[in-house]
Image (cartoon, rainbow, N blue to C red; front, top):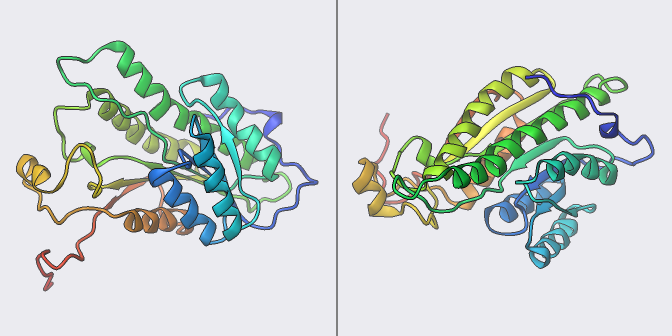
Amino acid sequence: MSAPSSPSLARSPAAPVTAPSVLVTGAAKLLGRTIALALAAKGWRVAVHFRDSVEDARRTVAECSRLTPGAAAFRCNLGNETAVRNLLPGVIEKFGQLDAVVHCASTFEHDDAASFNFAAMEKHMRSNAGAAIVISQALHTHIAQRCHTHPESRGTVVTLLDQKLWNQTPDYVSYTLSKAALDAANHMLALALQPLVRVVGVAPVHTCSSPMLQGEKLSERHGLPAYLKATPLDIQTAVLLALQDDSIAGTTLLVEDDTRSDAPADHG
């Protein structure tokens, strides 16, 4: 897959660059917000993407800016292709350049084998898979243009996947299909966009607040121990590792927390 060229994604030479910059989708609240704040605490200028949560986005921007100045909010409906294609040019115009993208936003609506329909599948595919691919294309184009004057320029894409890809359940069919498509896209994009852009997936085994699978419910369905659960801190750490370690590309980091006292000891 080759990324289309677009003059509008060129770096603005007049814009000062004081810190690396990252776009975090779905950063107004929940996990996206915690990741945005963690990155700001590590010196990243954060572009806070949101769809409808205006006040939450403003609060996230304010808190990120206190940690590293320069955060800004960007509204976009990830189900609208035109809006998605305009997102990165707007971020780059504001920030001067963009170094990374962390895809946290997801459409997450329940369906199952009985209620599945094309419209639900398309809705999830557009926002959860299609938007991530288009934004990754745009980041590659931007990095390629920066290489004309700064040959060392490189970018990173990190996508949040889901434990359901490795531990299937019969519900949330359209959501799961969209995440499976995104996982496949990660592998293809990693090949297509190298060496300018690395692509890495991060997949929590399950989070403490997962509405789908929790504790004993996960164990009963899949034979997995209940202590395997990822905290927001675990996920933040994995995202930071994916952004910072240039040796990680074209793979998915499965995130779990095995530090609880009821976890079996590893004597190996």
